[in-house]
Length: 557
Ligand code: FAD
Ligand code: NAP
Image 1: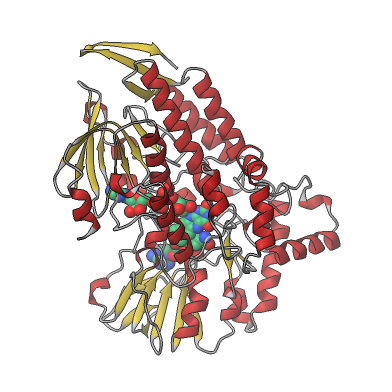
Image 2: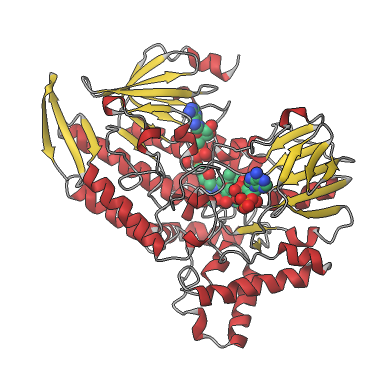
């Protein structure tokens, strides 16, 4: 019996306190929290199992780039003590096994309906409930909906002419076949050089007869120096978990435990700086971009780090022309998501790997045999699209969400996402977003941000219930103030200088707005706590006594 059939029997009643969309790390923890409050909750998940990102992204080399001891839930002391990570950066199968373990350990599956997409939802102002429509056509109603649909879950294949004419196989890293792909003896083309491509390319190159990489924009990548995790190291973490998790949550800007530097890059001499960058390069990982305290805000400082990485590329890659193509020069380091790799640059020294620059000669079209760029046809047995996601808003846009007076979220966000705290949207009462645009989200260790949002939402629902409140909605004023604040903070950094997916620049026609909140998870957490402590300042809370006419605002922001 498939999971869908097992679960279908349990959807006998179509009215729930809360519907959660998505069963990745966010949806799973949200379900656990709300169920422990005694609420009637139903989760709908498009995939056949839990895990979200780690269910879909099964491409070769996929692994986290936040260290495993930190890229994990902290909500259960027993869970964090009993789970054993085997590597500094766990690979996708291990992270998926962890998600499955969590689902089993907390008995989550009976309340998750798999192979089910939410396609639309609308808010009924008369009864303050959402009607959620599934791809089966079934309607479910719920007092509240939590979108735990993921920031990087809407894989994007570019709209290339002739795509369907290709006679070989095509793959997207974000929708990888569950049985894996054997590239042995094949001619493979990879389109894209972001984090996914950078992880996959060295492994595909080791299998394929020939690999051609099509690069539009080179990325900065830092070595992972991945290794197995010793028992001692894991024990160190586990013994000190409560303090270390607290530091990640409350003291860090990005949800990671490390000592944030206090010095500007420009305060060191060139020789000292170089020594410092060498030491950071030897440690590896994303925190290279926090080698000094001003790399994200000071172009002159940033240039020193960028130049160091370029010098490493020149050192590693033997062919000077290829090395030149691989060196990013058009944006500051860290303003496109920093990549973390194992042997990425080294892979371009292999005889069976070719790099093709498509910056000035975009792919003209896909042909039955391959693709054409710069007037030349490249022939392949397989093409891998490592072309990323319609990030942060893509999975919301796919659902037809209608709030007050039938307004759609698409209309509301036509010029870019507008939220209050990344958690709620004016005009869309009782609808929560986990790690939504306007929250630290993708700029942080996502598990830290997910847990914070889930806890805030769960606490909020408890408060609403205790006060007899049936509807909560961000006010227009608080929303526009928050959007202005998010923009203002971003404008003080170098981030808007890059054509990144943070800015929506990878999707033709998407508004160019810096979507995540860059103020830091520590400051953001304080702000969310303060808002709640002040009786949900900036939200309008309404009680209901029978009819919509008798709504009474008990708190105005
Ligand atoms: P997701 O894991 O994306 O889960 C959302 C789920 O919602 C999906 O399963 C999807 O199928 C489902 N869904 C969406 N829309 C619908 C719908 N309409 N109906 C039904 N179901 C729906 N972050 C880090 O902090 N560190 C890392 O090292 C890291 N590595 C990453 C590596 C890759 C390859 C990618 C793509 C992302 C990575 N991230 C990383 C970000 C990662 O997405 C988050 O860390 C985290 O897994 C997100 O969890 P989530 O539950 O919010 O969303
Ligand atoms: P991405 O960073 O958006 O990279 C997509 C790549 O495809 C870019 O090189 C992009 O070029 C290229 N591309 C897109 N459309 C194209 C087109 N029409 N023609 C040619 N090239 C095109 O996507 P991703 O690599 O999947 O990563 C997305 C995010 O997921 C990461 O930034 C990270 O947050 C997360 N992730 C993390 C890890 C990890 O190490 N833990 C691994 C994978 C993903 P341009 O740059 O020119 O747009």
